[in-house]
Length: 209
Image (cartoon, rainbow, N blue to C red; front, side, top):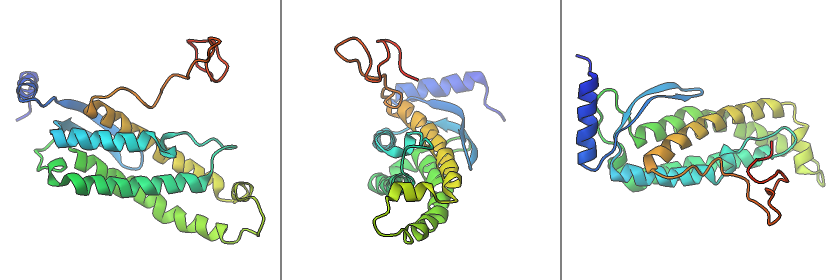
């Protein structure tokens, strides 16, 4: 039997009364994975884990767009590899509390984290890390590593896959932000200079392009 609107409201009221808010995300679209449907009723441990992973994501290269003429592919891959390890550490530290048994139609921190690890990060790192390493090993001594990397015939393909993974991580970060109950730390406004302009030179109140 399907759950009606009244049942959903009752569930939300019960969760709120017990100190748990219901985060009903409907669908979370993650490139390479598809759509994850479900309601997340986070326990306190999941909120804490969500904040830790959110902070990890937003302070790394992984959620920043990697433009063609700037950025370093090796740095981006290394950043993603660090997120892989950090996420496993968070899961290990909080244990079963962030991956409880779930009723159909529900998700947890553990479900989202492991899905992103195994179906988004792992395929990229397993495929591209050894290929980039093999190319780097052939760099002539004294050659600028950034210029050498940009000449790689597979650089644009790797850049494209990193961008798809970045979109996945931004989507995950938005969900973690909501569950952790914190402000948006991804799209921060450009800081203003004493002259009333932002750091990028735009008039105050308007960000640069």
